[in-house]
Amino acid sequence: MPQFITVENRDAVTILTLNRPDLRNALSQALRLEVIDALATFNADDNQRALVITGAGDRAFCAGQDLKEAESLNEHNAAEWQDQLRAYLDAFRQLDKPAIAAINGAATGAGFYTALLCDIRIAHANIRMGQPEINVGFPSIIGTRLMYMTLGHSVTTELSLSGRLLSGADAFQRDLVTELVEPENVMPRALAWATELAQKPPLAMNLTKQALREYTQDVFDGAIDTGKRLQPQAFASGEPQRVVAEFLARKKTAN
Image (cartoon, rainbow, N blue to C red):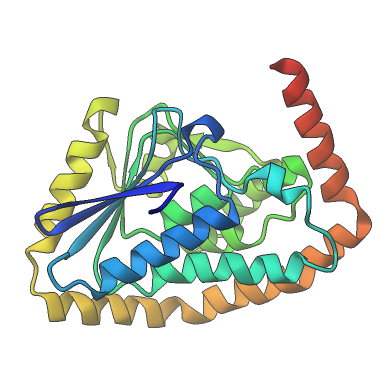
């Protein structure tokens, strides 16, 4: 039984919930592996035709990398960590069926990547989403490349270098969010989208998803390769470790 996610089937729609609300559904390696397994099961089930992914609670969709786990990263295992992250992200890219993100709270860092790799994103005006990695000493690489496909060079540069987060309203205006609704309507609208897309002819859906994947494969591969090259350099300097430690110490004091 999964420990960090829940999976529910409603007719032809699978609902996958990241379930670490006390940690704002942050991604640990154990959680990533559970998601990879759940997505493979969903993709292989002909009776399930669309996916909704959300986060437990109302604070976060996914707050990104679990910084407690990130404390163990160094120049020797940073490339392996990027491979682990690639496997998680690629599990979304390999889906032959539509994925809808029900963004009920913050979607930051790797949580932002997760949302961007879904086909449809439903959110409310008060969520926050974006790339704050630079604020905790991490180079902003994969999310920056994914943002670039939607936002272009100028805005992507601004958000990546500043670590500034967008509100749901701002994200909607910039086409990062498909539909903006009231907080209580995020899941109902996501389910409505999933139900509608689940009724489309399955082969046409599969082949369209395949084409979309092929159009962006070079971009995705390039982002991962860049991460594997640059992240070890960052950790060799000790900067990410120091900044993360300082951040966690401040957070502990504040609590």
